[in-house]
Length: 138
Image (cartoon, rainbow, N blue to C red; front, side, top):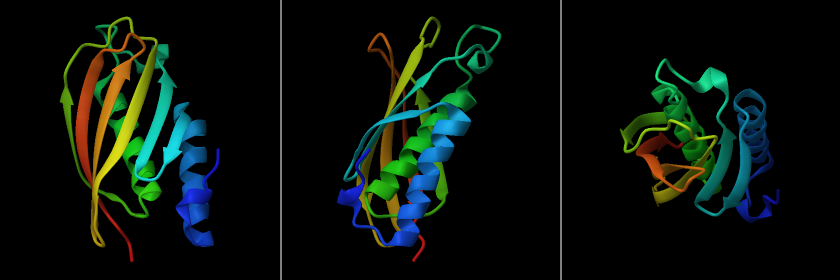
């Protein structure tokens, strides 16, 4: 995937590549869009992601959104840890086989970035949405 639009110094580019590799290896994500202020990734729903009700664990959804928001932050020129995350569960995930998460940088400041996220199922239903704040290291 092309990352030349980022114009990041080598150190930050290494951090971006590391974040992508960890998302892919540890969480099974496939990043489908990496653009300025925008990131999208898909994740297959595996049996270990399901709770007793055959729905995706809320923590799994939160983790997906946090990873995508963090990569979107890097796509917007920021780099740093999550300060705050909020999620609203909109619809149940029973029967969903794939999750698509989108992260959009709403505002990128020098100190903090604000990113909006949403997750839709393979049937196109909005499953959850969230907002994240990231501290940007100098």
